[in-house]
Image (cartoon, rainbow, N blue to C red; front, side, top):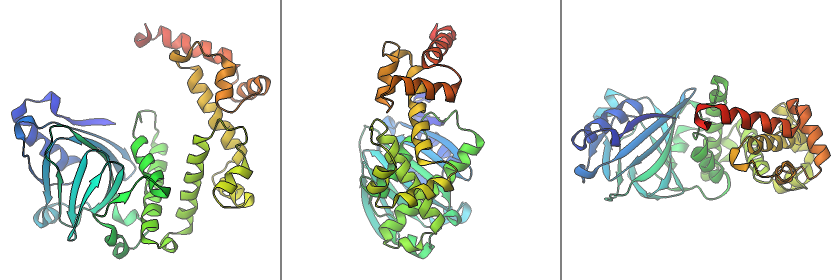
Length: 330
C-alpha cells in the first residue's frame, strides 16, 4: 500500500488541514471537525485494484460530514464498505444512525449525505475501506439502500469471509501484478455482493456467476485454513459446504484447476514460504512438509522437485544464501 498521509511527518498545526486535503483527494470530499485538534493523529494508505480502491485508515477523534453541496461538487458514485478493525465509528445516513464496533462491516453511499464520527479518544481507531463504482455491484440499488449505515457483523458466514479478505488482501501487496489487481477487484465486488445479498435475504438477486465465484472463494478459504489435515480431499470439502463432490469438481473446473491440484499447490506454496524463511532455518525439511500436509518425505521431495525443478534442501539453500548476500540480510 502507498502511504498517502502520515501525521507523524507534519507539525501539529498542519495536520488537520492536510488530513482534509488527503482524504478529499483519495476518498470523497468531507467537512471535518476535530474535538482534540492539538493531539490529532492519523494515517492513510491506499492501493488500487482496477476500478476499486482499498484504503487502510487510522485516526483519533474526528467528525466528518458529506453535505449535499459537496456531492453536487464531486461525486464518484461509489459504494464504500468499511471494516472497523479497532475502536468504534458512528455513521448516520438515510435517517439511519448506528455505532459500528470492531469486527463489524458498514456500507454507505457517496451519492447520499452522511455524518460519521469517531468518539473522543486519544487512542487511534482503525478501519479498512473498500470503494468501487456502484454500477459494478450486481444488486438493485433500491435493495442495497436498505443496508446503508446498518451494522453488519463480520464474524460469521459469508460476511466473515468478506471481513477476512478486506483485512488481509492489502497487506504487502507490492508483488501483485496488474492482472492480480483486476482479479482482486472482481473478488472484492463478488464477496460484497454475496454478503449484502445474504443480509437482504435475496440470494436470488445475485447472478449465478457471482454466486458460484463467492462459493469458490469460501471453499478456497476453508482449504487454506485446513492444509495440514491429512484427510483434506473432495469428500470432506464437499460435505463441509453441503454440496456434492461432482458440484465441487465443476466449480474448480470453471477456475481451470482441480480440487486435488489446488490443494497440492497451496501446500507447496506454504512449504516454499517456510523453506525460504531465515527464522525457520533450524526446522527440519520433513517437519515443514508434515506441517503442510505432506507426511511422506519421499512423496514430498518428488512433488516439490516436479514443481520447482530442485529438491527442498536445494531450494532452501539457494533462498537463504540469496537472503544472506542481500544488503538487508548482511
